[in-house]
Length: 219
Image (cartoon, rainbow, N blue to C red; front, top):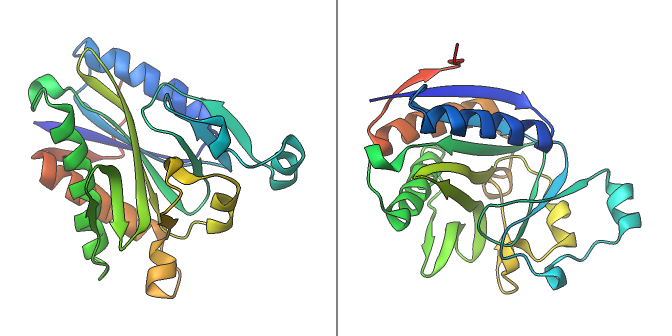
């Protein structure tokens, strides 16, 4: 099986959401193969289906000062942050062609990022009962997905050179006893986000046993 990979660059959250919806409809109709959308977002906070208002610490004035937006979404999970220097991945995958198993899918996404982190010398892993990828008790990658007719959307956010101060204004994913980290913080220097994206794409194909076609655009 093949997988299209579309690198959307820096794109506002609402625009990326519209692309996701188009790709989901096309995948459900078997008009395109599995597709991985990669994007960076301008500063934005997103609220998942399980979001609790007490985990949002910013005021409207602070939000304006930070130049950030807020969106409520249909993904799973609580509140998180997306911004420049972070790889956001939106896999549009038909689980009927893989396994109709949401837990398997989530663990597979985690495995993609665990392997990608290892490519840069970072030993990451899982915490029992908590979605995402961690180094110690600090979250390196957050996850939240939506599944409709077994086709996935939303996905993961992998902190590369992310400005972690933006997490100070939320309780990320509702985890009060966990921190947030990035490859830059762990390695002690910035890293080219394109290099990390390439490794994520390679590991995604490896874990899901897909032949990736980079920068493919559906006709």
